[in-house]
Amino acid sequence: MSDAPVALTEAEITEHLAQAPGWRRDGHEITRSFRIRYHGGVALIVHVADIERLIGHHADIDLRWDLVRFGITTHDAGHRLTVADFDLAHRIDTIATAHGAEPTS
Image (tube, rainbow, N blue to C red):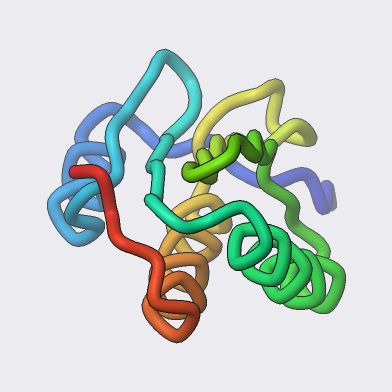
């Protein structure tokens, strides 16, 4: 029995995206950006990183002066999208809201 994550089908990805407003598909990852001042962005990233450590799933994060961008894919599934990616996306949305970050889309 394999513990490798299972990649979602195209239909499943479409369904999950419909339940994750603001997240966009970019190839085999989902992305979303938030407007927040630099130091607030650092705090947001630390909060997200704490949750990522607990759940064992991590986003690629890009921090700019007034913007934080998250990109999520499952490396262990061959850089494909899995349920874990959408779970992390929902968690990031909740954390971003708590930090007062404004979605760019």
